[in-house]
Image (cartoon, rainbow, N blue to C red; front, side, top):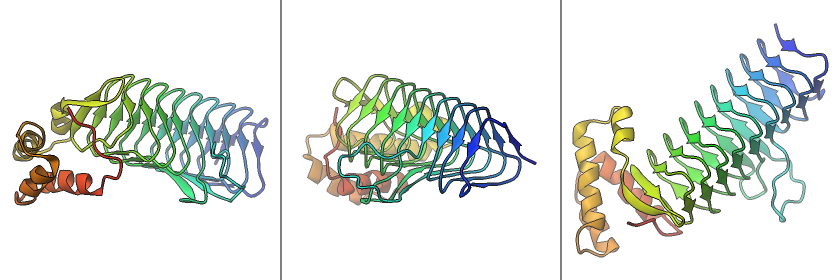
Length: 255
């Protein structure tokens, strides 16, 4: 049984599963799917989106409106939001462009008030986006990343898993996994050891990450030489870092 306020406007093409709650003055637009157990607070607008199960979307959120991209020509694209994700007040999540076709938000994410996620972004699982943080188009964010409030992320940047971005940081290059970054122009300020422990990483894996950080940034090796040295170490965490650096196209944030 659904609880849909009589002032809500539901497009005839929308698909609403069981146990969905839609508050007053919401607009559920074309080609929208809302899965079971999701709650949508009043005055939210959602269109061209797939909203997962057991999500909660707060007042004045805007999900799936056309991207803020001058190249957009009206293509039918989408937003995908994973299960158990929370979208707080006044968040905007734009649908994709022809470049990727969709904007993807993972499972168990928290997008805090006034956050913005632009077209064609891929946001992993268990990601926290702090108050008033803006993520530009085509950004890729891995699992378990935390953005503090007021961050800005440049187009096409990649953020490695378990990285933490301090408040007010401007990210213009790629952030390797497991690190902390801070600054008007982001710089590495160490490792996210607390985050690694909270995610139940083994102490041996944390030591491997520390060793990799020392080789990359505390030795006298140039980056290419340091990466080659790391490739010889048998560790899944080090492989995460090596693969990330080798796949970077914008270059990486450094100390």
